[in-house]
Length: 231
Image 1: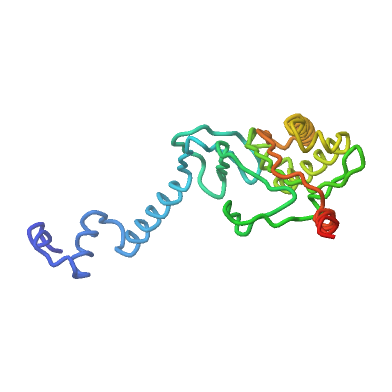
Image 2: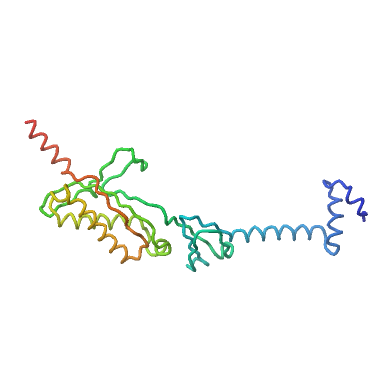
């Protein structure tokens, strides 16, 4: 066995020196057992670090234990039981989200031209006029737990509720009301109706604003009107 001086001046790239040092520190253990124990301890530390989470100011942490909801976390540094015992989901509750109804934009580029979706945009007014109506729905997450677990597909649910609410309100309004200053009241009524419906689903979503972007006669009607003018 090497002396302390010999160990101190040893070539540490040598396996012999490493074995001597481990033998002095752990006299009752073989070098292989010591190294295996060290690797296991290192892996254990890494495992415990999977339980450290940082929740950003715009986020809300949702803690799941074996897949079941346990609690929510506010912004800051948190330690929970390591994965897979506990998992923390972090939905962004501060973000303002927007959904297009009646149209879409390529790659969600706000500068791209709107592509009409007639199945969504075509609506009948209370005085039996058909209009193409495009609008945006602005929404935020108000309850992270409900948002994640109460409704299977939140975005498509919001869109379906928005289309249904707009059809109902437009169906009770005259075309002049929808196209002029009455548009503000239409937007407010749609927002209220949507919120009541989504609350009944326990969606965890708040509708912050409805913006009607376009209310026009169908393209076929406009083209026929222009043909008459030209004729």
